[in-house]
Each structure stands twice: as C-alpha cells, then as structure tokens.
Length: 125
Image (cartoon, rainbow, N blue to C red):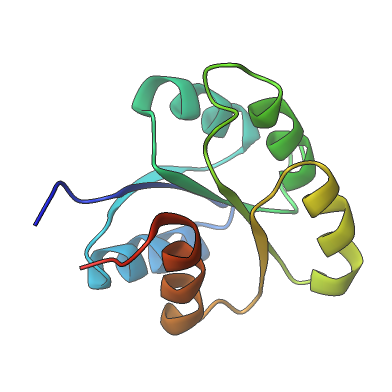
C-alpha cells in the first residue's frame, strides 16, 4: 500500500469540479482542485501531481492550451494529462497531438475516470 496517487483536477464549473473531487476520493486518490488554466499551470509545478484531468472549455484558456504549456515545460512534461470535454471526437486528435494521454467525454462517470487513470498510472487502491 504505497502513497496515494495525486490527481490535479481542473474544471471551471464548481459542481463538476466538486463531483470529480468526490470521484477521486471514492477511488482512493488525492484530488488537487484547480478552477482554471492559470491555477492548473501553477499547481502542476507546485503540487507535482501524478496525473492531471483538465476541462476543455474554461474562461482563461482552453484545456488544449493547458496541455501544450504543461507538455513544453521540462518540470511537468512527464505528467499524463486527460482532456475532459463534451466535444470528444472534435478535440481528441488535437489533444493527442499536443501530448494528452487520453480524452474523457462528458458527462464523466466514476468508472470511466478510474479506468482512464489506471491506464496512465497503473492499478489504483
């Protein structure tokens, strides 16, 4: 039983952010919430998460922009990132091109979140 995995969860919609934090709790990972792209970039550096889920549509920058910035920074480029979007097919190819590990369609289910995180981190709990 090693240390719990730490997931940076980024969404500008408070209800969705809260739900994702609860899902992380349920699957025994530590959620680090961020409400926008700027917070996500700062917390990716300061908190050193094991993985990141990022919403696509946010007011200050898109999830694709966040992925690009994290993947071009030496300190954070190794962190797997999952784009969460309502336009899955539309954004999937671009997300992968920018370095995303995968794309989760909205609405996100606990099972799909756990499956995606286990794909990039290995077995959880």
